[in-house]
Length: 196
Ligand SMILES: [Zn+2]
Image 1 (cartoon, helix red, strand yellow):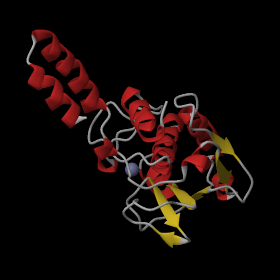
Image 2 (cartoon, helix red, strand yellow):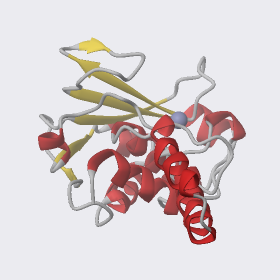
Image 3 (cartoon, protein in one colour):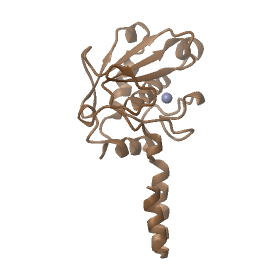
Image 4 (cartoon, rainbow, N blue to C red):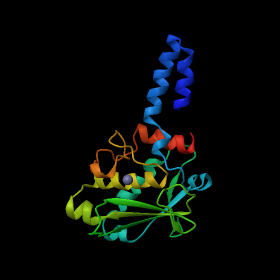
């Protein structure tokens, strides 16, 4: 995107500068720096299945997961998240992880091995939601829990953190649960990664 901006700027007409500013503002909202270079294969992303482990019912988060997952549908024609069997690619769990500071976490696996950089081709992912942080410590309401679940599904779709933005993918340490649905920036990142 940056190379495109420079190219336009070099033409130096006022129209080109106006165009540059439009293109530039778009490049701020959707930038590959906010994407994992790795992820599930595109053929998998076309119908990415998630499995709700029974622990989600035990810790009362099943409804939030079922609301969060489809909020990523209808944005890119190349991306669909659907509930599936225990053989699903993304397995979602809840637990009382009292020694952990995270509300939720997504771990991707490539060839059965954890991919800490998110730069490999994934064959599965594990999402965990932390009852200890979200409910015991913070008493989060249902929409805030949905925000955390939606954020973790965003990671499974190869979206990285967006700092402090109008985004469901804000950095975890802000504990910002304002956005429980994908925002314009998040939709732009999804389309940048997977197509329209
Ligand atoms: Zn995160």
